[in-house]
Length: 139
Length: 285
Image (cartoon, rainbow over all chains, first blue to last red; front, side, top):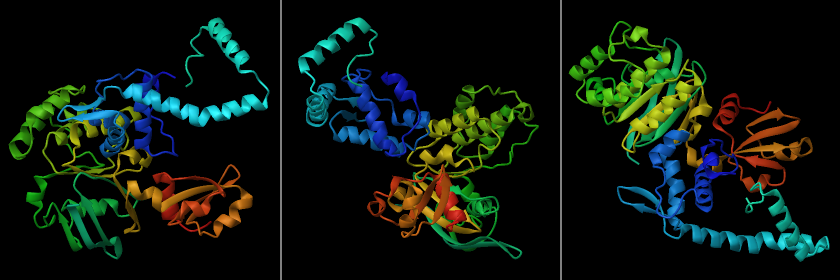
């Protein structure tokens, strides 16, 4: 999943409000490094026109990011990725993984009687063998 | 919310036919309102009344003016794209710009030329030489170059191919719209403008059957996809509409709490097209 290609896709998921999905896309772009600290977000007007969205929807999505401290408004100049946004996001994502996903994975490992050392070894060998970039991070 | 358009008990009859039947509504500044209705529902009559092209009963105020009596003042601040092309076929683009610059106090020729440069329309082309899509582009460019507070679009993209339609709305949002401007739009291609709207109004048989903000739609309406064995349970909550999809029952509910339907199947917010069918066709079939 590359951030740029994903953000070009105008398909919306019906289960989540669009402003929320916009917020998630920007977050994904920050995590993937497509947007880095200090980068300008595309203007509300551009995003609205590009996706044929109401500008208020776009603004609401951006406002979420401002409230989370990931993006800051600069008067008359637009929205910018806050310094340290990626670090903060990575911290949040790591914590979420450790608290939410890891217990599930750990329980599965135990239930199946697997050995963590073996699993790590296996992952390392498939990484160096594959080298297709497919095993990169957990998407 | 300051009302830009305010209608109270507005009716309009043609002979014995009540084309618009006792409607009341408000539209605020900076809103994009979708007016959706089947053919002959009264949309065009209502728009005509707003534009002062027809008189009507009841009280109607647009930008604080009576559209029928103060049409001349109103026309300086509103714009209209009709489903029928109204630009004379013999006129050259440059002549059209000359004309508008001479009659319309809020028309910016510079802005129009700047917008037309982004299209394939040439200054010395005649309207008759342009394709349907280009005529619409020309129309939108002119209108964008007018400092109007209210824009009324009646089936603006009718007969245009998908590329022109997308471009039309993209240009509308990037060049025309801002929080000071208000748009009223009718179209049968609802799914194309769904995400653009702040408000939606359904009209059927001259009456308003729905008038709501898009933001509050998920709280008011929910669609349930139930397996047949849950269908009877779900029917107790009185769906306003029911249809079959892949052997499942899809029911639309109004004013029913999502939690009450939890466990009976997948829940989602109906899109405008489905909601329209539910509200206009109505009744459990």
